[in-house]
Length: 475
Ligand code: SAM
Ligand code: SF4
Image (cartoon, rainbow, N blue to C red):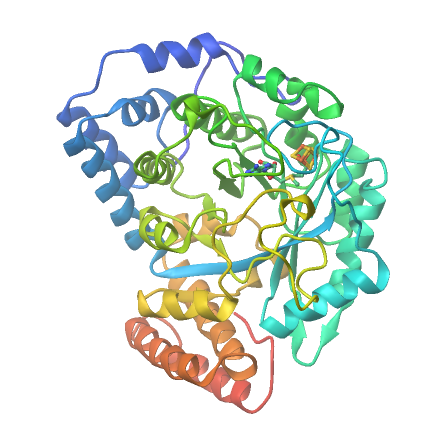
């Protein structure tokens, strides 16, 4: 069995807060692991087993450069062995920046009276989606502040609007959501709209720090947020994403909090989160940061590697908050999804000019503003296979990361062929000529790698059909 439920001081029950800070601190204060122990833990992960909280704590505490290298090497190997070279691409679409909370790090906070607030509705939303489709996007995450007007109905309607927009060969095939926690009823409403993942980040698992950064509004209730994704599960929405905002508190504690959260969901619902996000704090309008817990680039790479080893069957998302060079470097340690062509100012995808220095229109500053084409070109150069695949979700195969991981041959039968087919669509419809050449070379290379394992003639047949103008062919 891959996942063995563990017993913690607070018994895992649906809807019951589960973080015991003393327990986490005891794990973190235990003796330093030696090389043998770290090797053992890495080997366990490479053997496709989930790590216990105690084992994750050992990896977190391993400060010796040689041990850190062992962990990073393990994560690299796990990614290559289990997931191969695919990277799934998506883009965020900010729908509304009104917010009743006052998160001290965020440009949308109520106390930022200078913020230019907006909500994309009707034609504005449609124009943005058309612009995203014109770039070649197929997967979006819609982002909202927390405000009574962004209720479940509003979010559901926004998702439905996005699904309806079709321009040329363009269409959005998966809409994920990052918005405030909902009630069970609310989660049912958005699930009925056909959303993919619902993401809610705890920001920090450390209660005292949480209280400091979230002084008022609904988000000030730590416990309510902590168990909010339990309500999603209760509503039948089992595709959820968790995350921590790194830089608010000690990263070691946050990694433990994230893993404890995974354990809680697995113990209560027999399914972990679909994805984990690990945003690092970025500059935002008039925000003054306490730099004590800022995460260095080196530690950021460790965080990704540890998460990869700890939860080998969960998607890891790396966003354009990080600059292109760092993204390229840390992707190797186990990232499965990245955004490309990202703009976070409301309305920016369809507007010609935006001022990157004007922080009053956006939530925070991003550091990778390359076009989707440029991101894809770099992926191809780095030997990754860019993918816009949405097949599992549309065929009702939920928990695809788990299946990729646990079902022998799943990746070669489904994921790689679908990555190839969706890349071919992108090359046919949106890519610049020099990317077209590189893209088809990559497709050929990957078809060779698939030889003998899948129905390569059928993939070739579908590639021909795509060249003839057919779209949305998937396994
Ligand atoms: N308003 C909803 C909420 O807070 O749950 C939706 C999410 S918010 C629009 C998206 C995420 O951006 C937050 O959960 C937070 O982790 C992140 N974020 C906020 N301010 C940030 C900053 N200055 N730098 C980096 N990420 C930030
Ligand atoms: Fe509002 Fe979310 Fe920003 Fe907090 S992080 S101020 S809830 S948009």
